[in-house]
Image 1 (cartoon, rainbow, N blue to C red):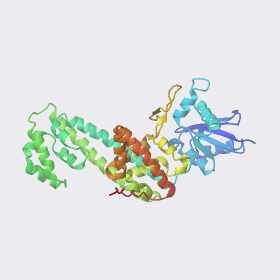
Image 2: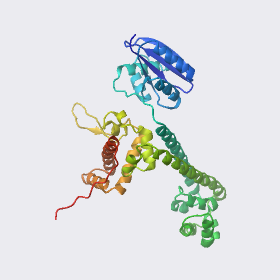
Image 3: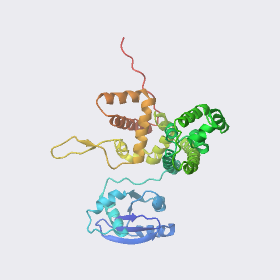
Image 4: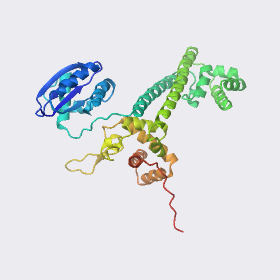
Length: 396
């Protein structure tokens, strides 16, 4: 009995599995339901073909979660190959047709011949919870952004001056918009009564908000077409944004509670610019286990903050931005670098030095993000918190 390889083209309701031997000869090809009894039966049949099996699959979660968990619980080696890698590899195989069986055959053949694939590992419960919570937060923020854009588009059609003056992502301006939407209505109410109305609804700095609204209303005395109907329609998205703000705040509390349970919490949040939300997203994207990346240089490459070479016959040393990387992790690195420029003197000095070298703002921020990844890697490796560098003393 020799080693064999099995590839699974994962789906929501059914998977297709192909098993081959070391010569590439197909030993099994089967469509299997995404249910535990069928998956266990498939596992037994594949293991009966050889002494040791290596598995490949094209998804790391979602519809493939049950299959991956079943395999990992039975001490199987499972590799994940991205859909893009499978699509590019398919060009080197015969035929243009696309079927589940062919996709599974490509997956298993890639697992058999490639040596650079890292096996999937079972994540701890805290990381899994953070992945779920941060994903939920991203959905809520996206819904809020769409609703705010729709609200701004409607509001600017009847009262552009006030729309420009208000930040319609915050609760206090939204409270004003739920009650008064037109210049005429605000002028009729007057500054004092509007301030009282806002204070009764617990608006912070109601006097400033009322003053802003009155000034905008005094600059527009023209009633625009469709003003009455649009004012009624503006009320609904304003309330939706307020509700979404509450949901985001509730999820933020859950994220913080779960993140504090992780053993890397103190280490990650000690790095300037990495707060609760960005730190939790870093754990959700990486799992917190740096050994999974092999070397320190693979993490910035995976996060999209390390340039890749683009050489040719006549040109060498040419670098470009990568195309394949985790957009989510890149946003964490980039955003935390921006925050660190304002909060950390050391980061600010590094950024200013890169700007003085002639780099653009984006290039300087990416260079800072790349440097911070190395720092974060070392902190997680050593299990210690970040300590700011002592200020340098100039000679008298």
